Image (cartoon, rainbow, N blue to C red; front, side, top):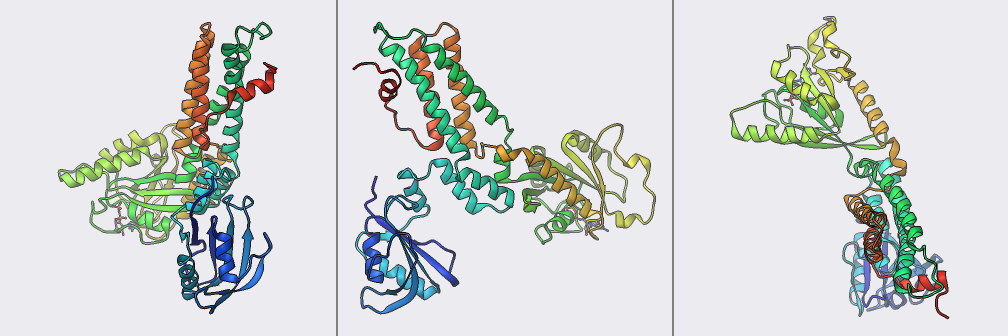
Length: 456
Ligand code: GDP
C-alpha cells in the first residue's frame, strides 16, 4: 500500500540543539534528497554532505545524510534522513525548501508510525508500545513499553490467532467437505481441543489484575484525612515541590491535586484529597464527595491525622471504613515533644495496618514512609515483567476472545452444530485480529488445502 504523498518532519526535539533530524518519507523522498544534496547516497550509510537550497544553490548547512530505500525502512517506504545542525534557521530553511517540492507536505502527528502500521512494519500493539516508550517517565514504564514494542503481546496474539484459524479451518473443512468419502470424521474435536487450550492461555494473560495497565498510568496513592492534618504539607514534602496549596485554614484544598512520583523506577500518582469532613457548604460537600470517591478507588490510602491532638470520633469511623488498604500517618510529631508513645497508638488488635509517625513540616520520619511506598510499588509491580495487557483496549479484545471461545466450547459440548462453532471461532479470531490491527479475512481454503490435500 504505497502512499501518494511524501511527508517530512523535524523528528528530533525543538531547536536550538546540537543536532536536528529531519525525516522524509514517501515516493518523492529520493527526489527530495537529490534536490537538497545533489545525489542519492549509498543505502544505509551515513554520508557527510552539503545541503543546498534548491531554489538558488546557496549552501544551508553541512549534514549527515542517510538513505533507506523501500522496503527496508522504518515505514516500509523510501525514507531519507538528514542530521543537521540544530539551529532554528537551519531547520526552517530545510523545511521551507521541502515545502516547495511537488508532492511533499509536512507530516501529521503520528503519520510515520501510521505508515509503518499500514505497510505492515508494526502491528497496532507495537505502535502503542512505541507511543508508550516515548511517553515513559520511569524505568519500569520504559521496560514495559519496550517489551510491547518488540512484540510481547502482538506476537502472542498473532500466534493465538494463527492457531485459531487452523482450528477454524478444521471445522470449516468438516462443513464444506462432509460429503467426501476420505474426510476424517473427527475434525471438530481437535478444533475444540485447541480452543480449550487457547482459552486457558488467554484467561491466564487476563488474570494479571490490571498491573500492566497500572504501570502505564501509575499506582494511585491517595492522601486523605481530616482538615488541617497536614496532607498538603506531606504531599509537598513527598513531591519535593510546591504542588499543593499549604494553608493554615481548614478546608482550603477543595480540588484533588495530583503529583506524579518516580519511586525506584515505578510510577506513583499521589492524590491530595480535599479535607474529608462533613460540611453544610454545598461546594465543600461536592469536594468531600469527590475526595471520598477518588480515595476509595486508590490502591493505597495514606490516612493522615494530626498526631498532636486527640482524633475525632468521626475521623476514626472513616478510617475504619478505609482500613483495608490504608496506612495511618500520625503527623506533626514535632509538636509532641518527647512524650512517650502510648501503646494504643499502634495498630489495634491484630490488624497489620502500617503506621508511621512523621513531621511533614520538618521531614522527620518521611524517608521511612518513602521507602515503604517504594517497597509497596515494587511488590505491586513485581509480577508485571510478564504482563501482556497494558491497555483497556487489549483487555476488552482478549475478553471478547475468551467469551467467543466459551460459546464455541459450550456449543461443542452440547453435541455441536458445526456452523455455530465455526462462527464463534471466527468471532474469537476477529477479536484477536482487532488487537494487532490484522482484521483482514484469511483465505481459509489455503489452510485447508495445505493441511489436508483435499482436491487434486
Ligand atoms: P491539610 O488541610 O491536611 O492539607 O493540612 P495542611 O497541609 O494545609 O496543613 C495545615 C497546617 O498544619 C499548616 O499550617 C501546616 O503548616 C501545618 N503543618 C502541617 N504539617 C505539620 C507538621 O508536621 N508539624 C507542624 N508543626 N505543623 C504542620
